[in-house]
Amino acid sequence: MVLAAPTIPVLLAGLWWAGCAVPLVFIDAQVHRLPNVITLPVAVGVFALLTVDAAVTDRWEHVLSAAICAAVAATVFVSTGLVLGNRGMGLGDAKLILSVTALLGWWGWGAAFGTVFLGFLGAGLVGVVLLVSGRVRRGAHILMGPFFITGAVVILTVTARAAPGN
Image (cartoon, rainbow, N blue to C red; front, side):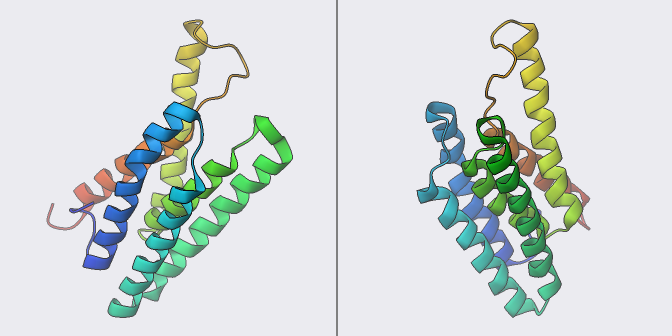
């Protein structure tokens, strides 16, 4: 995050998100929940800090991109969760994806949805390995939170390496 963020408010947004993402991985692994007490404040903090960045730098297109990415992703996740019930995405995942796609959406649509893609890809690969090894049965619930968080870290790393001067 330190290498990817071009301004202090964007850096603080990323550090705030990362600081909240670490406990979310462990909580999701332990109790299969992404609690509102963390997911909602992280989303509010990310949006607030990105808005501060837009106000300071007068680059509102970045915060608009972040908001659109987050709105689209959260709407899709909530919709599939409501339509598919237990077979779809959990609402905790939808609240997590709100902050993930907002943060990565600051860099653009590709970063935000690349993160979501990597999350699904990672979960799918782990699911196949678990199925083949006999550790789970078809229809088993795979935790998505850690995979979306990992996808965000990968995209941030790629973004930092691709930044001018790196």
